[in-house]
Length: 286
Image 1 (cartoon, rainbow, N blue to C red):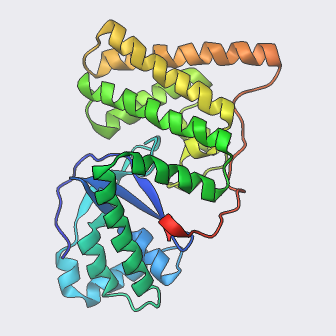
Image 2 (cartoon, rainbow, N blue to C red; image 1 turned 90 degrees about the vertical axis):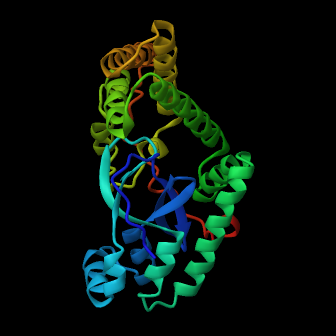
């Protein structure tokens, strides 16, 4: 059955892939929670599951009774802030599948069970999560050199958010504001402005997955510098951390401007990686 959850602040959403369809998921209490609309769209091949979900709840009274919302960011970078999305854990998704007549139901059940089992493995051996993330990027067609930078950027980001948590920054709303502060100082654009510059108009498109090598490097510099500054100043609370975020982003911004002056080329690019051919998902992802 679906569990009713209060609004809580969760880690950034991650992406799983079923039959080339992206399913957003997030961890809560060491358990995967999946975005219900993504699951429905994957099962019935529709770009908009809203009406189908409404009708499904109308005809299945027990399903409707268990419906609840939890807060989940739409991207790893949380650049777009938080949105309330209907999510369900593995047990809840199995319940929803029962209400959907689809030939994909059985393959999806097997996929869901595998995802849950992989989470248990990752708790026991965190290195597996890193390997699976790397494999996902390889299947999408990214180069090994780009993947190395992206993986390093994930580590730098985690160090920063861990530092923010220790220093009194509260939840994803404040994380998003500080992230915007770094981005504005480093690139002259907030994350949302940056996404528009790159033509990323879908809420689940992660800005960092569309950054060039240089953009990833300067993004890492801004976040790593922010961590160092926060530690050096021993800042506590939102406002002092916001000043540290601005100053950390400025370190990256100054370095970016110096490179642009020396090279004669802009670092901020309109390039995105939508054109990367999505290879058929097998093994870990199918």
